[in-house]
Image 1 (tube, rainbow, N blue to C red):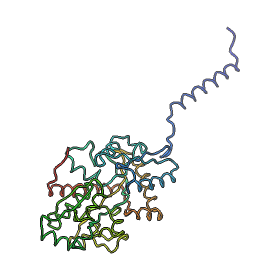
Image 2 (image 1 turned 90 degrees about the vertical axis):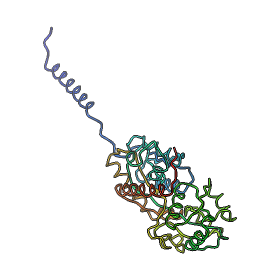
Image 3 (image 1 turned 90 degrees about the horizontal axis):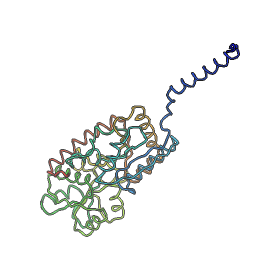
Image 4 (image 1 turned 180 degrees about the vertical axis):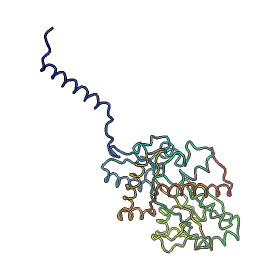
Length: 332
């Protein structure tokens, strides 16, 4: 064999160094891209076209413009919000798969109305922030001989089995039960599939009063078709400042509203939770957006994840007590 020259040795050395560098490079993990680096999917667990759906899309657009990634809102209605909530509960906690813009129903009331849920309303979710709240109006047809909740309660006490109250979903149903408990009156609760059908019965006198979201009922009141007896928030609404609260009408502490909030699957990394919270809160503080959401009858609010967790725990206990007191049977 011929002798190995210095030039050959140098060539092999460079080749070995190159292979070593390649191996080291392959062994090192790729540097993580900052969150978010791809589109975010948002689940709204009710039908599209509702006020909550509109708010979700406004917020999603604001986030998208800031992080320069698509934020897609997907309505997934079914079983009073359970279907959409379950999708989120079983999703990967990566900040991309699903974020839920939910309501009071999904993370508090459903836990007491159903004997078994496919998810745990606390353990299976990561709280992000409150988004908004909408109170209910106690409305009546113009033929009802009462123009305030005090006058209506007097009528109901004078004729304990005469008067009825309508509702469309579980939250106004429980708000109606809460009113019965607080005022000590007996009302016949009448379920409706749509608000429109209930409005027809109110106008004709077949239904006496109704507990309905301000976003919907305010339109009927402003048109003169119905009259508002009271609002269920703790303070009067700037949209209807002339309407007194139930609390100031003789029932201190009375409050019943629907909370819209953002949750993610359990186990989401703290840095992603903090990023989402900061982005959503920034969007909610935009004056133009606050005005648009306010016109829907929704008060814009925000919170820390910890504050939202406290609200969920408190509301779980509150509505569970109402359900027990009213003897509402659980469904399977």
